[in-house]
Each structure stands twice: as C-alpha cells, then as structure tokens.
Image (cartoon, rainbow, N blue to C red; front, top):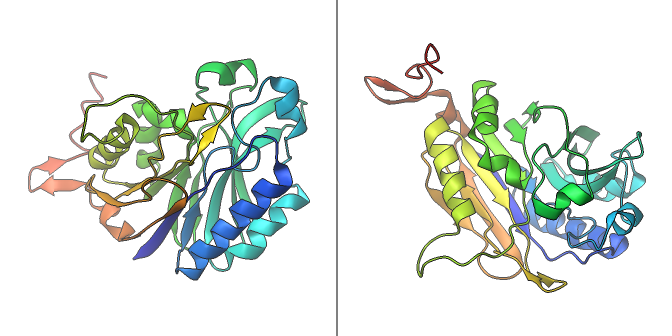
Length: 265
C-alpha cells in the first residue's frame, strides 16, 4: 500500500523564494502525514500567469539548482514530484516537472503538450514521460495537458507505470451543477481504461484574474476518486494498493491490454 498526497497550494507569479518556502512546507506536511509519494502543482516554484517570456525567464531554474535542496531535505523517505519553470542548457524555457528524493534528483521531464499561451513562452519537450522505478512504486510523470492525450497515458501504462503523477494548473471552466471538473473525469477514465492510479495536483487561488479549478484528485486503479483537496489550499491523501495495477483483467474474459486490436490500429 502506498500513501499518495497531492498538495494543492497557491503560488504567486514570479515569487521564487516565497513559492519554494510554500511548496517545501507542503512537502513537509505531506511527509508528516505519512506520504510515500508527494505531488505538487504545475509551475509550483514560479506561478503560471506570466506576462511574457522575459518574466518567465526571471523565475526559471535549472534542474540541478540548489533551490531544490529544500524539497529534497523535506522529502524524508518520500518521492516528490513538482512543477517548475526550467531554463534549459540550450537557453530555452520549458514547463517541467522535477522528481526528487532525499538522495537527489531522480528525473526531470519537459511538458510535451503545451496549453494555449504556453506556446508563446515555452518550448515543448521532445521526450516521452519518464516511467520511474522508485522505492514506492513505478511512477510515470506528466504535466497537465499531457493527460488529455490517450496516446501518451497508454504508452506509460504499457511501459509498466503503476501511478501517473501529474502536476497541473487547471483554469476554471463552467460545468453543470454537481459535475466533477472535466479534467478529473479524464483522469478517472485514464485510470479505468489502463488500470493505473492517477494523482493530479492542481493549484488554488486566483492569479492575475485567473481563477483555478482547485480540482486536485487521487484516482484509484479502478477509476474512482479516492481523495480530493476541495476548495482552497489543502492536502488530498489516499492509500492506494499499486499492486492492483499489475492485473489488467476485469473479468475472466476481459483483459484491458490483450484485448486491444493493434492489428487494426
């Protein structure tokens, strides 16, 4: 059984020091609650609503930045996945996610599917999401809009992912009364059709006039929401048996992967 925590915080655009302090405190709180896997929002260190690329550049970090020692120090025995604005060695900006544990950085991933005005600031990544064997399970790392592409989530599941961890920033969209956010429904469908857990960590608050969905959710391998953070800053925590993801059968004659018609598609 793995305890997964998603820390729904409210970063402030451009406030690197304050955001690192806020996110590190959230990691510490999750670890104190027994979390094995901790997910932070997209662009947790920088905020999201950049005016332009130059403002983003002023809040960018490299994956080996000393600033991330704070996450590593707070991680304890947990694996931490958090979003950051990356300045690449090529001088380009990337919307990225870093994976750290107490011993250092495990991986860094650059978002491959850029949403809306992100395309004016960031360069899309050119590598598939990493699927990482960690002490707490096999974790695939994606960022926000990546989850909307079944080609990507299926690939991660086929590569052995037990949980898809995704830092996200979901702008608030209208929805019918009583319905879950559409992005959470996508996460539920992803979990159900691949029999993997999905942990999506949204952000809270309003940034430069943009309200956020505050849709943080942990979805179990059967596709049901196991925990949410609710409105405002807070933690979603759930104990998930990742061993269940190894059996892709639903009934005696239904196997989610073997039943694919790859001869046709």
